[in-house]
Length: 297
Image (cartoon, rainbow, N blue to C red; front, side, top):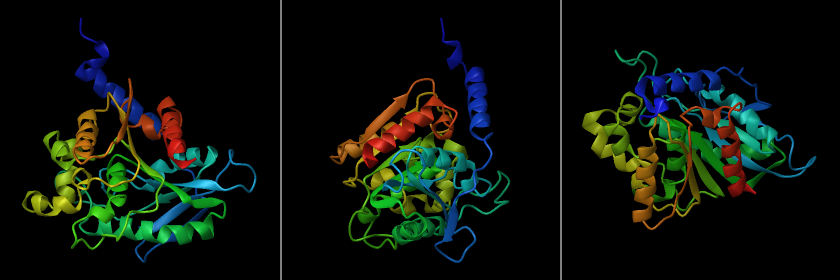
């Protein structure tokens, strides 16, 4: 007898309910905001640690990159409850905004991302972050930095940790690996080929790179599955019932890493879809915090 929960109609209804729950929380204002560039989207929100760590004690820094298919309607405000949740767990938190696709991008809605602006911003934010964090989050221990991101933000987190293995002519390439304790990527769009075959987020990854004509040329500069090994501890957290970014995308990245000689952890959560990973009301969000803590502490 088939599992009723696995039937398409029930899966869609469940995914809709999970998204509604995750996005129902009021946005949480940061303790401070700092600019890392001149554009209005080039800002970072800072949340001071609360709870664990003791009064005045150092706290690991968690850098959050939000998702939303790199599209303009989705900004950092929708992950502010998640950022605040991590702060209550004792982490210092930096939530990065970046330029996304322009509003009214076409018949199918806002365009996914901007080339090269989206990548310019993430690179610039990560480069500026240590100094900004020391200024805005006195308790932050930047030597214990963990990078996390959800969905499209998970892609950006994996990409930002791999800048030292970008092609030699990439403007974002660094001389060595970023000083990170690790990366926890949440349902990341981590393999552009598999994501394209599955039409993840309406083909957003292909759109991010400028469409079909430019996809093959730009993919080596943007696809995390081609930027391996990184030498940085990496964990993927993935819901098994995710219909937005299916499990196959995370598995493809992990397989690519293994072929490159690198072990990537994959934490699969039963009966969990796309949005509970950033929903403070969901058990999955607590699992995410524990995965971050495993690398940070």
